[in-house]
Length: 180
Image: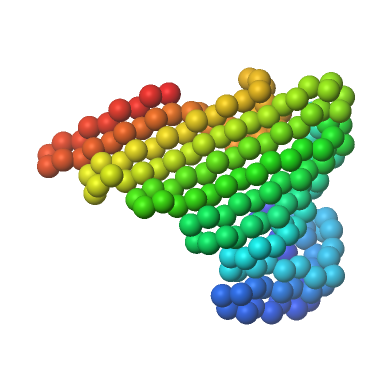
């Protein structure tokens, strides 16, 4: 049995465009959790508001995560975040994805001034992949955080180690360097 399911009275699929559902019930197991008169899932890249998501944690209380997806071109997209956490207050951030010749990357930022402690907490993260040739590539991930507990408190499911990985393949050998 799946952990969750979506049941709709009517589903309309417009290929390469969107899926529109009406009379939609979201369930966890067999328990209905909430109902929406309609729900739209876009299938193409375009500027749009992101449907809010809700969560709860002992650390921040009830939370709502909202955003706006900005599609500039196939090589540049951004996602703006505006979130509210019951115990911590407002937070904002931006995720930028880009493609360059032979490479691609992501730059993520997030900032919150916690209303209960007045502490300013933040993250800046950079990921980059570059292919120099068919046999040589580079992967890089850097994280800069306001404090050691930021990821655990706000993005526990996304914890990632910073690293630099350079690999080269040749006839009959592989060479790589990993720095963490």
